[in-house]
Image (spheres, rainbow, N blue to C red):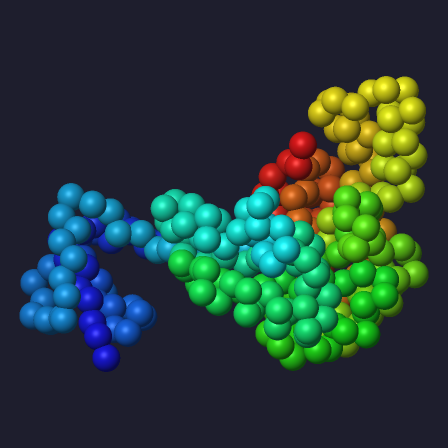
Length: 266
């Protein structure tokens, strides 16, 4: 049992910024104390002149471990996160090798990073056309949800869901109560436009962006909302990049649907 008193700072919460002390017991906040309290602790951290803020939870990181730590691993990733005030990360399933598509891959991932993470972490599982049967075991092993692509992910070992496997995956997620995270872009149209651009020698960043016009996102989001209404699946659309797509998710009236305009992936 150990305790820490963070004293003298300005405590920031959802309601106010005020002078208050924070008592932490065994890594958990035990009490918020007024300046004139009489509590003592094993250690005291003087925060005079500083703000004391809640840690940030980053729900979408790609730390690529195991297998691709030369891109970014948990050592460098969680070090940078901690420096920026992030205390928990939720790591995506597709850039590690093997991707986190079943309980075995999840166990390998856990064992690879257990000594590397400097902050708290959780895992997203993944789902591809041939892995729907593994959703139950991923759910049992505690993933926060599962990620799928509706277009080319860029990795051969992580193929996108077509209309049939999407329906199957969404029905399975609904039955299990698992949150499904979707990268929503129309595969046929983005594939056609990308192939056309490559054939014409257009390979710059803007050429890539032009191969994914707003309609490709809007069409994929609209179809997914229709399947969600049919199956009862809970959805989270990652990195929504168009106002139209954000609008139709917010106007869907379905509390099972969530969307966050986290970033535009160019």
